[in-house]
Image 1 (spheres, rainbow, N blue to C red):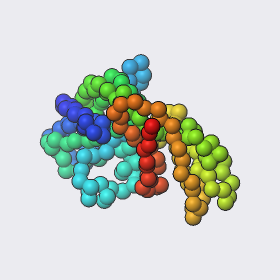
Image 2 (image 1 turned 180 degrees about the vertical axis):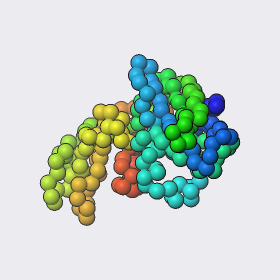
Image 3 (image 1 turned 90 degrees about the vertical axis):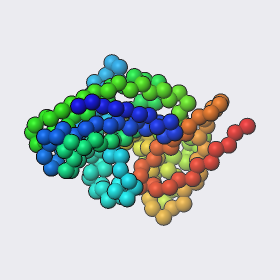
Image 4 (image 1 turned 45 degrees about the horizontal axis):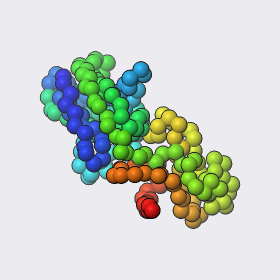
Length: 211
């Protein structure tokens, strides 16, 4: 088995192609891992490259298996060329050399495994995931009280969808209007800005301004 990788120039997500062995039965288990220089293997935040309609039909458990644990299931895919999408920003930002590994198994049998080297060049990418750095410090709290119009700052999200050391921004209590926040960036030149928030927050409004 061989891996073919391609980095999307806009999203910077990494697309990985691999072929399911022909001897696979009706169900193939795919394990995706990544290793950075000097580190060990860690689960990669991945999902299958499928249509929006097919993605909406995925169960929450199957989606979480991919983005949290690096595990995918391919059904009736023997001999088929499959594509997955890896979000590298849950582990690293900026420049890095990464080794990506895909292992395909059926039941207790490991059928194939392959590694690919990926060079990440994301110096012009900013990931807003440490919300402790907002200007209005009084509008975020790690322990909000009932009725307070403040954002809930969570520091225990590492190992899920957040990078180690990041702070997730969430809603502590429903039906309370929350104030807008200002995040200082101090950027020069073209940059891509990604905002990392829990999916349950839904859509957010982001406004960029500069001098």
